[in-house]
Length: 543
Ligand SMILES: C[S@@+](CC[C@H](N)C(=O)[O-])C[C@H]1O[C@@H](n2cnc3c(N)ncnc32)[C@H](O)[C@@H]1O
Image (tube, rainbow, N blue to C red; front, side):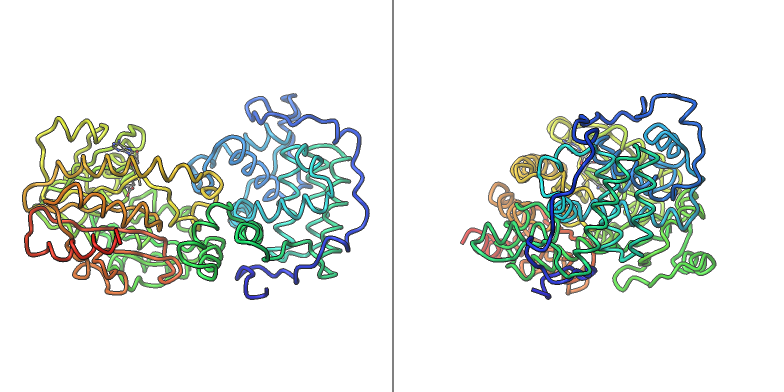
């Protein structure tokens, strides 16, 4: 079993429930309390004078983490946006804390911000696993189900800190008990105390109540889903597709701390060497990308980069190398007319534009006006707006009506995002199996629409940030059956051979490449010489 455990987890061997003693006693108030609806505008404490109080006893990173978790789970905020100061958090953060908890904490310093990022991301990723343990220790599913949202978040934070971050246990208990007492009431603090101490006892006795991976396929999938904290449907889908061992490696990757890449903004005349100099000055550890000239990779220090203003000043962008290599597949050249069909918020548009050296045009189409506005603003900031034009439209309608044609057309299709689960901590819980079916239909419709915009002899690139064959290879196969005028142009001339599949596609695989998952197919209109490759691929796809 040991090899099945997550890379970062330091869990003692799974034992049975029986070592745990009597059910924990909870206060009458807790049992009777109804689940409050999260409404930070109103605040859980109401009185405005109370919200002004500055509390110096409670550790600020825990208070802020608990409130962020509430906002993400109940308020629909995105975990990744909340981590960037100034985008969704920043100045408003303390307002949310005051309205939700009834007090303010001191301002967060860099160390606090890092802890908040770690705790919020980790607690979301490990939610299923943590809830399983909390529920087991409560001994009563109803108690767990009726638990107040804030109390549950405080417990999740405590469990995550003890089990996954290996923090000093009794300090974690004291701090979280204090938070529950001040933010809720003394009885809630007693409850946190009882449950966390029980967890410590079980951990010390190597008897955490963890499920065993045994039984039929469904039961094993459920156990793995708990141990690796993923939805059961994902575990079953991956186990079927890549086998249990690879599925476990993939889940371990999704649970690991994400690494980030920065792209030097050459559109603004910033070279990678300039960016490296800045990172050295800031003492941010980084490595040069092995695959892309403009990119550097970093494991930590993103908060420092953000606070130093490197993104705000347009010197660089946060962009994964896997997304950068999709642009390599497009291979934008000065003077070309490129249509980016699903362009916002513009990561690929901006990178393509920076290749044009001021000659040519990237036409960025998107249905989402707000995201398109971000693209426009970032284009200006990056000084590539002279070669970008934006069109707010539904691609399916636009392509039918508009005679515009491009030398190259990129369709970066809306997808499940199953390749980027390590960066998007909350995405796994928001995705449903049914989404894939709906997305496939949309992907087919957009694929057909995008094909109308390709000049004869032009190139159509279909890409996703998914690792699911039904959204990738199968969509291309179905498209080629509907559109015999297109054929596959193998990508091995554009990306390192390690990223080229035998069918001629680009595939970045988290397990193999330690990057986000991504896919791209390069299709050329009317090219007889390549027909054989397409026909071979089609034959294999429908075998
Ligand atoms: C995967 S994201 C694109 C990411 C973008 N290429 C980048 O690199 O930043 C997919 C985009 O498709 C857009 N979209 C979805 N349906 C669309 C439609 N019918 N027409 C145009 N855009 C659409 C969404 O608004 C979203 O911005």
